[in-house]
Image 1: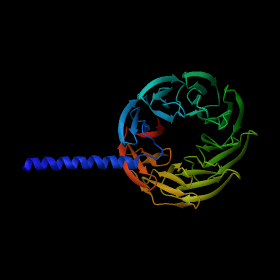
Image 2 (image 1 turned 90 degrees about the vertical axis):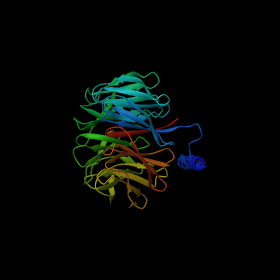
Image 3 (image 1 turned 120 degrees about the vertical axis):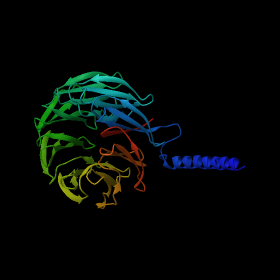
Image 4 (image 1 turned 180 degrees about the horizontal axis):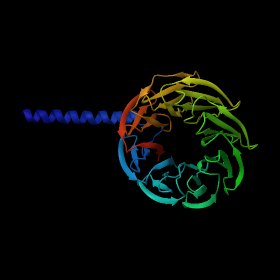
Length: 373
């Protein structure tokens, strides 16, 4: 009799646990996600050359996929059910099919590629290869290289303008940016900027570009219509990231050396406000309503939500040892943070700024892509 009672108690507990898990899953399920749709995160692990796939509805790791040594530049394709990335050590682009979780293509692009970008219509991908001083354009449907070009010495990053007409390439060893025709990859202009240019942010109307310096505390401002340098803005700290406000009115620059966030007015080309945030703010991402900027502090191990309209930092969200890349899921329900030190992906409920869970990934994670399919 006692044994039967214990089994009944265990059965009741199991049923209650199943109901609780279902309720939690429903509560955590992003508001935009219809039944039958999947929401997954893809984390590139530079330490072991893999991509970890995480189901963000079930909050579980579902696959670990070898993609090649030193995976970088991981991006979700805007239209296709694919994740694209690079093997910097292997010198190729890899394409991951999200339904099968299999690498379905590898495309040789040149030595030491670091980042890629897609055209606004999703038909082409562009890659700069610093080791071979070359630029390639790839047709995303056929996965064939359809154009080749050259920029300056050690082209670092290539970004397409929102109108799809120009490809902007930062040339580290020349201290220039190259403006290439996005269709033919022919050079339209070469413009001198601050030393060792790196990251690129382009305004929505494709009229102006901001470029960070890897050697000085400056960001260069270039007029794309006149094709001239407008200014090299002194920041007072090394720029670690460029985060453009969705309406294009302001540019936010986390700086670990300045321990804060610099704000640039993109119309007047002036550094306006500065917010002291913490030890080493290094990267950020915007909330869907553009009123909250989430900034990762790699030194303090937390994320700082910043109300940008009132220039006020909120209570930090503790996430791990060394948080780097952070992104919001479509709709802004969940904030994801890659922790380089603890080899975890932190999952945060954005509405309440509360940590939901930490999910183990591979060794030395860095890049992050999010895909709905």
